[in-house]
Amino acid sequence: MRRRDFLKQAGWAGAGLAFAAGSRGFAFSANGQSPSPAAPPLDRLQQLRAAGATTPIQVTKLRDTLFLLQGVGGNMVAQTGPDGKLLVDSSAATAASRLKDTLGKLGPHPLKLLINTHWHFDHTDGNAAMHDPGVLIIAHENTRKRLSTPQEIQFFHLNLPASPTSSLPQETFTDTEKVFVNNDEVDLGYMPEAHTDTDIYIHFVNGNVIHAGDIFFNGFYPFIDAGTGGTINGMIRAADACLALADDKTKIVPGHGPLGDKDALQKYRDMMATIATRVEKLKTSGQTLDQAIAAKPTANFDAVWGKGSLTPDQFVTLVYSTL
Image (cartoon, rainbow, N blue to C red; front, side, top):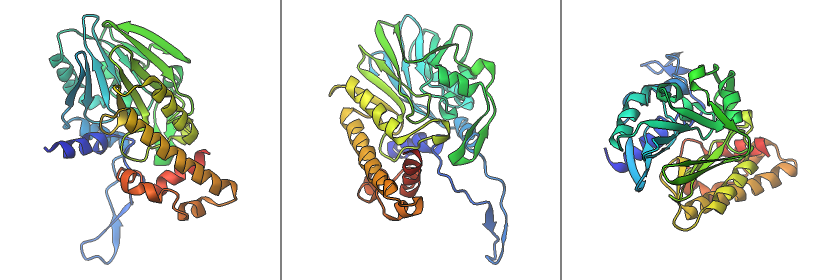
């Protein structure tokens, strides 16, 4: 598999929330004359788990003890060392065996700490499977609240049951948290009303690596989960928070897409800010959503950012609805 094809598959084909909405419920018959009911499409959680069983995990070395792991769902980061391994996000439950094998090849020490960037299932579905004895799960307090109760992702018409107790974070925080693991300071910071109301960044201070979670979709328009507290302005503020931590040598891991850096995050932030300003002007002038979409406020960005799962019109819809 070519690297480009792998990244496309790893970043999107199994990404759960990265699938575009709008699947049709009918398929045309062979003679083309009349529609017939199609098999019910798999929902996005089912798609994630189906892909998790077969998708390889690609490992990219970031620093001596830090590694980017890309399979299904969101991008993960693993830290190794004598204190035990640390893992950011847990992919799909069906990918757990492959993920454990991958972690085992990075060093002899057991997994000790799992951190969730936010509540979405493409980052937390593997929590229970990775939660062996002695593994502590940490996340923002809203992540535990979301996972412990039924949730709806309105944009995708997806209803999710409460997660089992073994999936829930055991330690939570409200604003910031700091842990010292494997000779590194790991800072966790809450980014409110961004992709959701549960997002955090993970900053490996000595390693100079930031996992930005789903406030950063590198190379394409991002999904904003308005139904669970996400907003476009929160996304912009979250990008600013990560940029303030970075320098020209910082490696920035997005929730989806290829590894980034400060320049890539800055371009992404500026794209969001420009489109938000344009859509806000349309909305405050009384334009309806359909009129705002027709105005094509993303037009000069579409060639670069419109190649992901969300169409430009869908992104404008998300921006308009969260302003």
